[in-house]
Image 1 (cartoon, rainbow, N blue to C red):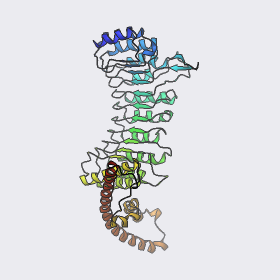
Image 2 (cartoon, rainbow, N blue to C red):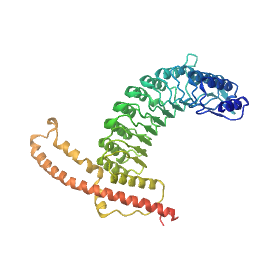
Image 3 (tube, rainbow, N blue to C red):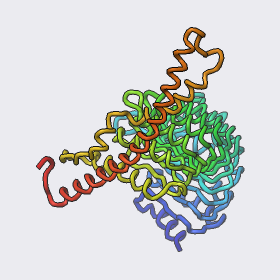
Length: 455
């Protein structure tokens, strides 16, 4: 019945620009019938064609693709979940590359073509990607894809698929793409590297989803080294990148001078405290070195412990740009640590909402420890180890040996005292978190009562 109604509307040329038959289970014959109806439709009626989950198979999809090429005008096509395979790549290529001249009211000529292509949950591999993104012999040398959104998630693209997308980017033929969704595409480290090394040509890219591609630390390093300057959302969950991969990403956050990344998802990557500390140092470092663009950080379902919570707490204290830090399903983090982080995040969110309420004064203990510089305290023991473990090449001269020995003894004494200070600092951190949570609740209550800021 859905197909009959859709065909009747198309034949009668009912004025609508979207044809939606999502989950209609048309089958191959239904796809062919739909294609014939599309050929009779006006081009401006075919702006969006949604055939997700219609079971139309390669035969029906081929017929639809050819019909859309014949009539033109389609700017958004969804053929997800239709059991398409590599044979479909060649059928789709003309729809991507062939263009029809369109004159607007100002008599200017532009190229009409597909802007959004969604092919998720099919059986497309590297061969299909190669066919889709190879410039046809009939196309002019300066031809470009006008895609702004490409979704190929849950297709076994493999290394060849990643390389094919990388090549079309490197040829500067897809400069307008804003969203690239490649979740679960089996790219591996090599496929991700082939794609990543050409991301600089994606000058409009805002969203990149590489979740669940088994990229490992090497793949993460390749992405980190080639972050597009426009990228705002980077999703890398379930990739086994480990501490080394996360550290390279943390370095990229501060080395990319024009980094605008707002969301970073690193869930389920086997991360330990070293990764969280590296990220916290990048986010908590003072301006202009420290990153202040990131707003959402997802470190859930990793192997983080108390050291990670302390480092991230430090970053939240000095970085008000962080509005979300996800630490759920880190089984070694206790409820108190999660609550402290939540309080600091809530304080940042309250600041982001505006208002200039009088701040709650910190306790005497927190005031005494505040000027000490928390980041330096937590890394002082590393500095001590480096001083005491110098290599023979870097060892002091004989004339300075006695002086170094005295300095080392003094440093060891200072390190012992530092341990006590760190313990006090941890207690103060919980106190600061409690006070900031209380402040946020007070802001909310005053706002609810209609009390103006500063009253």
